[in-house]
Image (cartoon, rainbow, N blue to C red; front, top):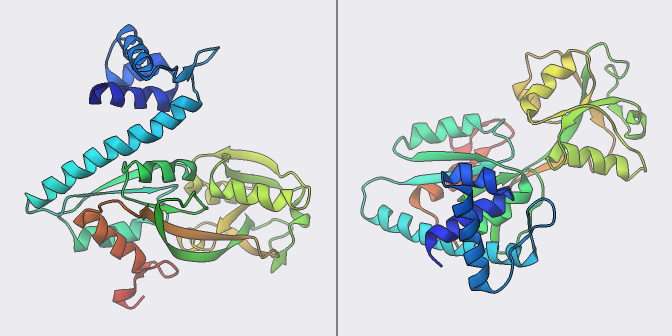
Length: 299
């Protein structure tokens, strides 16, 4: 099996769709089908279930992990050699569920290290551990736990999550509210898998309640704007208050010790981090996440 075959397998495994994979790879679908068939023949077992929609089976998932790690090691070696033979600092690949709250940090990093190239990858937390172990990314900032095997981590921030409501909402004058009081409230939130939705579902499930969701999407930055229109309420982290100062919403404490968010920086424990990645790690761990500035600048 050659590298091109393995790379094509990873695309098919990620998309679980031959025609879309062929389009992304710019190859003919019959040719891609034959490539996957030859790989399965060489391994002596199917890698996909083909009853109905194409699905990666257990053998395929196992093989994918090895292929990702193998190709990740090769790419890491290529980058390490490039770093030693060039005068630059290289590239850092940073992943996060959302980049809201990272813009100040990224601006400060680029001012301090203009020669470093920064690649940003937005992805759900459930993909982060696998991508770190495969060395597809160097660092990730996650707002929820991810499988820690083979990873190193530093906690960046632990903060309260608040209820945000329209200014004329009946709860707007309250200093705090219980989860039970939110049972019939219309919620604006993110899709399943994102930390705001998981927190909301977890708080309600602990009380045998189901949240009433009137809007779910992929734009956390738009939630405060939607609240101000009167569409509903939402759970927003304390850090969001810094970025929503011009948006007319009321902030109310939630009377639950579990209504919190933790930001954590992860990287591969045994991965070779480029100079660029080490510089970014230093910047992230030295950032004052409460004030939004570097601690070295007095934040």
